[in-house]
Amino acid sequence: MPGNRRLPTRDQLAAWRDFIETTEALRSRVGGRLHDETGLSPGDYSVMLALSEMSEMRSSDLAAHIGWERSRLSHHLGRMERRGLIQREDCATDNRGAFVRPTAAGTEAFDAATVPHLKAIRELFVDALTPAQIAAAAEIAAALRTHLDQP
Amino acid sequence: MPGNRRLPTRDQLAAWRDFIETTEALRSRVGGRLHDETGLSPGDYSVMLALSEMSEMRSSDLAAHIGWERSRLSHHLGRMERRGLIQREDCATDNRGAFVRPTAAGTEAFDAATVPHLKAIRELFVDALTPAQIAAAAEIAAALRTHLDQP
DNA sequence: CATAAGCGATTGACACGTCAATTATTCCTG
DNA sequence: CAGGAATAATTGACGTGTCAATCGCTTATG
Image (tube, rainbow over all chains, first blue to last red):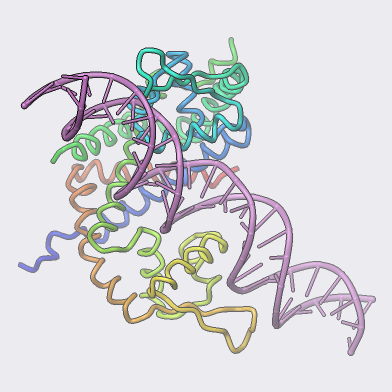
């Protein structure tokens, strides 16, 4: 029984490729529309979404909330700060810490971005699939996630 | 009938998020394993895979073959050339053109990467899903792709 | 209370992607 | 065949992501 008995079949490999390439194209298309129509990148949107729920947050908590590494967030916040979307403030109780809060311009940009973004999701994802397929997609995601989270 | 009648429902949005975040995590995990175990990035692998089928190729054809923009390929080939995986040669019949060919080291790295990569795909994708789910994933990808290629 | 350990956050170096501009060559057309 | 349009490929600027190192502050411990 050769070792490659355990490798994917031709069909499984084709399914993998179609699946992974198409989901990547989908993400990129939705993100592109978000950016083109609103000036916010997907990363910007995630940050602003989290801040819109809390309005002010420790940098670490924000990173945990959106599931980013802290250094990634730090770089991203630097770019967002330069563009005037957020600002950082020192934390009185812990001088190492920093608060992140949206600026007025940032909040406005986020508010203006929400509907276009949801619309893109509807048009490119929801409208492409039947209700059964959407349910299947959610189940597939759950199965993959469970498997990924294993040892 | 308010305009947001046409926006995704709570469930649809949750499905979107789970789906897109999980597929991204999956891609990144498979890519990470490829890179850690073989020293080739997913981009390197795509390039070497295409070259393994043709052995020598015009840069443009290579870009078309793997569906990349030419400038992306140009940057990537620069990095791969620096690492000694490929080399570029002038084209006799068209002095604008360039041939790309794998080096011996590149071919060796690719050959050594194939099995580990397929193994990662099996372990993280194939093994996570039932045969019916894999088929459903392929159908979902096809539906999304068709829809993306529309307007 | 000194100091080492730990934590919050940033930084620098580098890989990767996109877009717009550029260079060099070939092709086309009057 | 002259000169501009088209083509092959590269380049530069910049946003994005990861990893490892660093810096300053807090806290626990002897």
